[in-house]
Length: 250
Image (tube, rainbow, N blue to C red; front, side, top):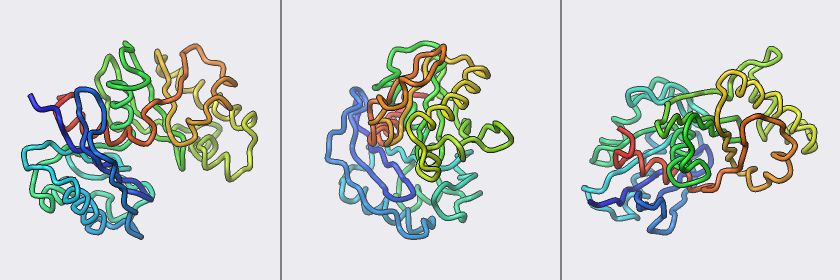
């Protein structure tokens, strides 16, 4: 059975795509990256995805997964992070399928990254509940329980001390408030302690670009669950979207 699929990862600044061997989680082509159009409007973003698909040159029988920074419900984008507010309530999957001339699997970007880490990365083989968090402009989260993705978990927005806590604990908050690693870790400790109290996971996986500096802050955290850096880095969304497109999870 063919295991190749296309994964496309749409972000606020860049759109990336590649062909993935979903049996191994390896990219079989170079990753194509293009800038997200200014304003991030639906038809402009879809046009860039069409360009990426044309450059990849895949046949109509190759599955395609697209991940996007929004809550995705029944093919609609119900929120919008770092893209146009025109996406809110938009029939996104239908537009992609019309312009690409094929069916796609459409999913939240943190969910795709978390699924990739469970299938091929840091959380592979871990039973029970895994919580993936991405520390960046905000805090993205994904829940995977015994290998099953629980979609659209927005745990970056839990309220602690009366505020949406991603505004205090994201990497953007560290930069904005000019926090040392030690002081940022205190905020992360409060955040992850709350998640642990609510959900008692077996494992936390920490992604986002800052995860490459994990040795600066993860050892400062004191949790019952193990907390480790993600391993797939910037390819996680591509790999997860492709894997989900092949029906790795029904």
